[in-house]
Image (cartoon, rainbow over all chains, first blue to last red; front, side, top):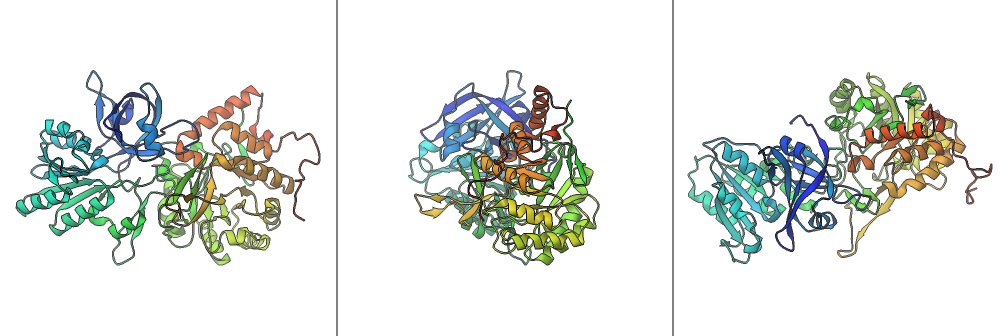
Length: 280
Length: 316
């Protein structure tokens, strides 16, 4: 595991861009976290001061935002309004300050050429892939993004990835953009078209059933795959043991590990997916 | 600079702040955020003899100014703790108090004996109050005889200071503090969480897989202060108070009620940097009120009447 140096920045909200009724991108002046973060790590944000809600919420670091001199000035968060905390983050105003704790968790493993990286994102699961793209582009790794959503209008930031040379493969459940159906359909087709000895690593983040399906697909063709899980978290620091997920053990029942410190990124083959699905 | 040191049985803590068991992992998780040696003590997560997996998630749910948890005492067991975590805690300079769990009296004794055989354990907190496990624990803590028996049994196997952690889920907590004192406890800590429940009104299901859980956080603080106050009237051994502490003023409130030291738990989840802020604010409080020695505040609440210690509904 990485040696951890964790800070709590009272980060000024530099921007809050509404993408739709559900989605927004908040930019936070958390320069220390931005400079220290690795792709795939997360922060715990106090979405409102005071006691209700009492706890912070975990959010993937979306982009590292540069200042005028090019040095990291802050981070952005891709947010989907789901509950109280995400609703508050949707409504924050520029100039407010939010407690931002991080960087936390295990980052994505970084592959090197000639391995290609295929990123598989569902909805707000796009969040941990911007920093990964930056890191892999810098190394000259060829990238594809398999990106699925309910509707074409929900495929945010596709251009951001295209501008960085990422090959886009899109799918929507209503068929309004890309392949009609789930993103696993074009993923399986692409794997079928790829020589078995061509090195491809798969990175996945999205709803649990999607990640489970991608894990099975990757296992069936013997490809390395990593997933980034999203669990209810109390502290993000390993203190509370609320965010546990089941991992396989050799010859024994699954063992529960903390997704904040052992994850959120896991090798897909190490997780006990049936147990994870049961956790809801 | 005021003297913040906290005499506690055979120990003299650097200050009265302890990290509460179950809210701070095994302490080492927080070494990247703070100097563990700056705390009065670290009370590590409860340990049985064997490893435990705990409950199926969801394990926590937030409620107004508080949270429910039903973790189920997931833990690495005492053997792995002394081998893997205790050396790290010693290297970090942490004053380590171990929360000891048991399903039987023998298990409490065996875990305590193993800990006593290792350098680096400052004291034992006996967990007779976790509301989230079926056997052991709170079964002892909800019976005066059970409380007495656990403390008396562990007293025979260790010379380490013993501090049973009391449950608030009883009618008269002071009688439990007395039972612990009579059985040879060096201190008592209170309160553990309040047994509680939250229901999703749309699905009609409990929000926790375990159905019920323990309520902690600022929501419980006034009840915890009252219970510490009641225990202070009942026993002479030190009291370690806890329940929703989130500021230096909360620490002082518990000390005035009768706590010699305090534990911070849930507030550390929201702010792992709370410790240095509370210590700084305690210094400011002492300066403002011209207090040379923080320990002089213990039990110094001025109730104004001699009968105030008698609650109106004390059970007979």
